[in-house]
Each structure stands twice: as structure tokens, then as C-alpha cells.
Image 1 (cartoon, one colour):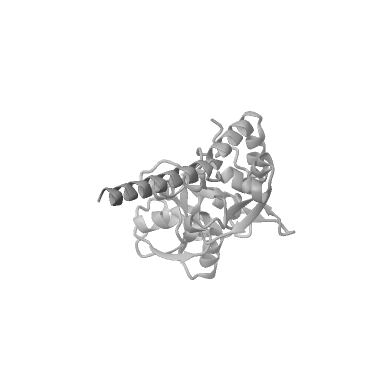
Image 2 (cartoon, helix red, strand yellow; image 1 turned 120 degrees about the vertical axis):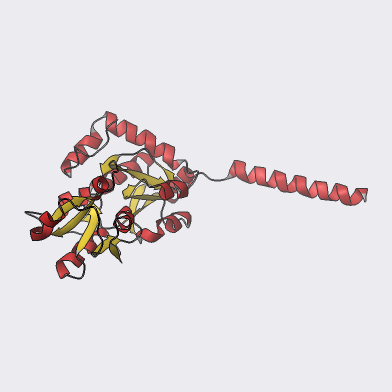
Length: 267
């Protein structure tokens, strides 16, 4: 009996030591990224944060800052288009190293990822054909409307909460196509995207903002953050990088390039 007990205790001790050793020698996310030589950034097509220029190059506020962050780590940047519904799974599977795409810091996001300091303010807005915008001036409900939303987004949550029948699509740009095609009555997108993509001088000049859904729900502005794997030391690396780029004026300079100078958080 004593021999069996000693053997069992020895096994437990060995397992404990093995776990400790693994914990001590486990590779950090920062070391992992630097060893492979690239930072894989999960994005969707979302102007003015991430979108492609005529040459197919990813540009935008988030894309430009991601390049600078990768440079600070001594690695290349790789942009990976993802399905927004599966951003956490993509992150945990190491298909990407970071989610950086105007991501609203919702409670479920913050529970599933290690998130950065907030870096930008935003709100959800209802977009409709311009001639119908005035009809929604005092609206408090979206009941009876088919509302195009990016699947898994804060916009989907807002439309659902206000009683709209949601039409989930792959990205926010596609929601606008739904409205133009007449397959949805309205779209819910981020205020920052609306400022860049609808109205005079844009590809969607016949669309307009009809309602700020944050105000309709009695909510304050939302905050964007960057997401990393739970426990990732890349979070601290990003926060230090961000503080440095705010202090030297880089963040404001890049924000101004994309018309975000009033939305970016500089504190």
C-alpha cells in the first residue's frame, strides 16, 4: 500500500514539475511573432480603417498603424481577411496574431481576448436612401424594417435591440450594397465608416445617415480596441507602442490623413 501511495505521489510530483517547466519555457506571443518574422493582422474591408487602394494595397488608419507596430517589433506585416463571426477562433488557432479592424470593445470581445487600450471613438448609425432619412428623425424602433448588418458586429446587436429584422452579410461594405439594391430597407454601420463611404463625393452619394443608434438606445459613444490572444504579451507591447506614437504625434498625423482626428483618443 505504501509503495502504491509513494508511486502515486511521485507521479503527481512529476506531472506538476512538467507543467511548471512548460509554463516557464512556454514561448511568448511576442517571441513567436518575432521568430516567424511576421505579424498576421485579421481584418475585413472596412474604410477608413482597412481597405484596398487601386493597386490592391491595404491602407487605412488601422492598416497604417499596424505596419508601424510590426516595424517596431522588427517583423513584416501580413493582412488576413477574416470572417468577423470567427475572429476569436482565427486568433486562437494562430491563423492571425491580432484582430485590428475598428473592433468595438464589447463585453463578449473583452472576455474572449486580451484587449488594448481604447484608441478611437465610434457609434452605430442607421443608413437609408437620402430621400427617406427625414422619416427617421425621431425614431426609437426599427420594427418592420429589414436591416443589413455585418454578422457578429456591434451593429447587429444594435439593430436587434431596436427590433429590426436583421439581414447578416459578410462585412459592413456589403450592407450598403444591400440598401442600394433594394434588398434591405436600411443598413447599420459604424459612424466612422459612414463618414468615409456615403454622401456627396462618394460611391454612395444617394445614401445618408438617418439615426444615431447609440443615442436612440441611450448609450454613450463606443470605443475601438485591438484584440490579442488571452494572456498575450503582445498586448503590453502594443500599449507601449501606442503611447509612444501618441506622444510623438504619429497617431494624430495618420488619423488626420483619414479624417479621424476628431475620433482618435489621444490620452
